[in-house]
Length: 126
Image (cartoon, rainbow, N blue to C red; front, side, top):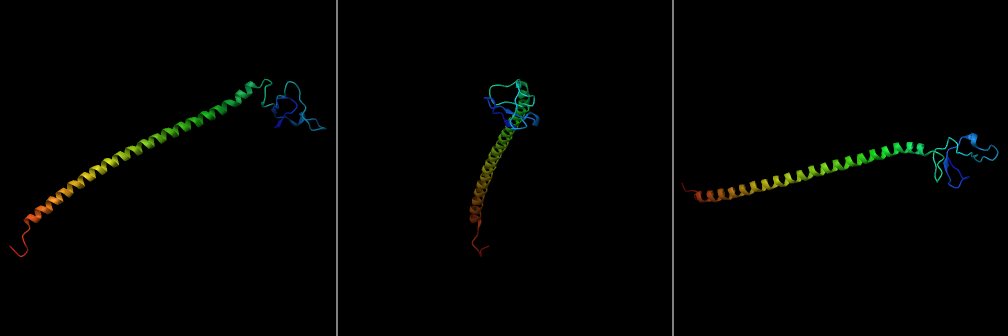
């Protein structure tokens, strides 16, 4: 691929060896552009609008696929975040329940110790 410098728009054109001037190595252009022209950079398209649109179709499809993957990634991230938040809520609820049970056990142990001390007879006495 070479940049055609014989026109003002500097078209990007693929040339075959037959299109080169054998003596100077320069590119010989005919008007309209040769069929080997794959595209352009500039204002003149030489009737290649359809070819460019045809080439752009797969590019747009790839871009859409990438967008779809990005959307799926965001959806998965949101789902994982939701599951994580739910796990934190359950952990907090479990911790609160455990603390409540520990407080109840401490209360019961305090009552038990106090009751045992009330019932405790001095040692050596029957």
